[in-house]
Amino acid sequence: MTLEKILHTKVDEISTSLEVPHREAYFLALDLLSGVLGLSRSSCIVQASDYTLGKEDCDRIEAYFSRLLAHEPLQYILGETFFGDLQLSVSKGVLIPRPETEELCTKIEQDFRGKSGLFFLDIGAGSGAISLYLAKHLPQSRGYALEKSKAAHDILLQNISCYGSKIGSSRVEAIVADLFSMESYVDLLPPLDIVVSNPPYVLQSEREEMALHVLDYEPEEALFAPLEDPLYYYKGILSLCEKLAFRKGACLYLEINAKLSQETLALFNTHSLFSKVELIKDLSQKERFIKASIRV
Image (cartoon, rainbow, N blue to C red; front, side, top):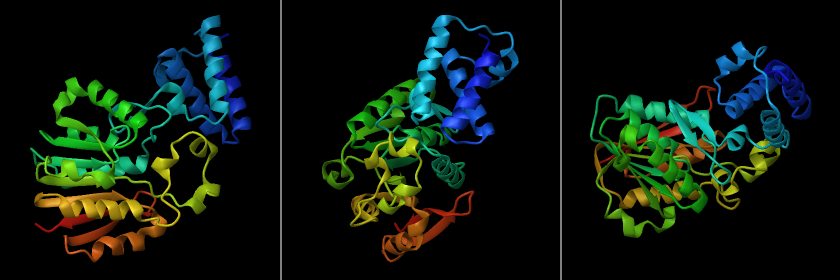
């Protein structure tokens, strides 16, 4: 069977089974085939009519597509995802980095462009996407990636190791600890320039709006805020910031739930630690981020 034939067959299957537009189904099929065969998208397209698949390849493709049709995220199936110019390992148990978080990293990079030797803390680091992006794009910076989940921590270490030769493995240090039990680590951290976090902020009431590939596979503890207190993690971050030391010009950056933007803004806006607190919109014009300038 040729690559072209299996591509067209799988596009129709995906579009029908997952109820997605044909164009989206095409790119899902193309990306999965690219990953399975170790080819780029463009190579798959160019070679589609001439590339003949053997039985072993066909069996592997069928197994992978079965997982996709069961709503498993493509990133988990392939074991990797792209975040900016990084290619990161991911697996079930670690949140798949989102484009909005990439926007936040770009904002931080722009704000600190031209500065070197920065220190940052990434709270709830997950796969290490934020930490590794900042370490790569902020010269001579050093980061501390805080993560409490064992499954996510294993992936975090794997990604730090992978990029060690490119950015210097010692420039990102993983810390296994809970946000709410950081007392023993606070004095070990240097005065910081950046604190950043994408904490769990999805409301329990938003479950019915979410896709199955998110609900059935991604870790709930990395997605959902507690029902009784949707700002629970933001309050924890604020409490931790009160104990940390900062350098002049330091800032706190947060990804937030647009539905709670005003409530989250008020939490930080009334605190004496900050000289200025801003709401920032994402590319979809949703109030998605907070930047708080820290008074030193």
